[in-house]
Image 1 (cartoon, helix red, strand yellow):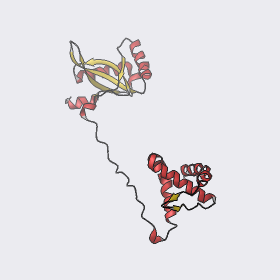
Image 2 (cartoon, helix red, strand yellow):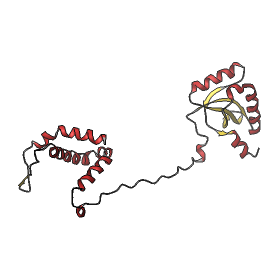
Image 3 (spheres, one colour):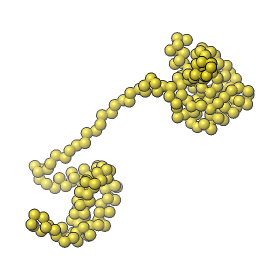
Image 4 (tube, helix red, strand yellow):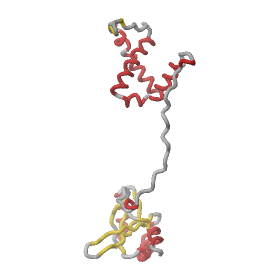
Length: 206
C-alpha cells in the first residue's frame, strides 16, 4: 500500500492543474465539472494518469496492481450489490520442477573454482592418486570434493584430470595451491567442472 500512497500523493500535486482546465465539448455537450473538493480532484487526476499509463506504460500499472485491485474493489462496493461487476482474477502460474540438466552440460565449465592436482589414464589410478594426496596434504584437502574431468592432451591422448573443490574465488584456490606446490607437488587453479570421482568409479564398475 506504500506504493499507492506515494502514487496518490504525486497525483494530488497535479490535481489542481488537472481540474483548472476549461470544460471541453464532447458530442456537442459541455463536460461536467469536477466537484471542488480535494478527494474529487484527486480522483479526477488519478483517473487521467491511470488512463495514460494504461495506454503508454502498462508496466507501471503492474507495479501497483495489488493496490489498484484493492481500490477497484472498494469503488465497486459503493454500487448496489447487484450492479457490482466481477473483477478478473489473474491466475497464479503453476509451479513446475525444473528438469535435470542435459547430459552434455554435466562437464561444462563451472563458475566455481578448483585445484588441478594430477592427471591419470584410468579412474582407479585417479582414486589411488587422490588417497595418496590426502595423506600428503590432508590439512588443506580435507572437506574438498574430488572430481574427474576428461582432457585431450596433444600427442598423448585422453587423460582424466583430478580436481578438488569447490572454492568461491580463484584467490582461495590459489592459496591452497601455494601450500601444495611449496612441498614440491603440482597444483594449478582451474574451474570446478567434471564429474564426481565416486560417480565415475560407479559408472566404470570399479
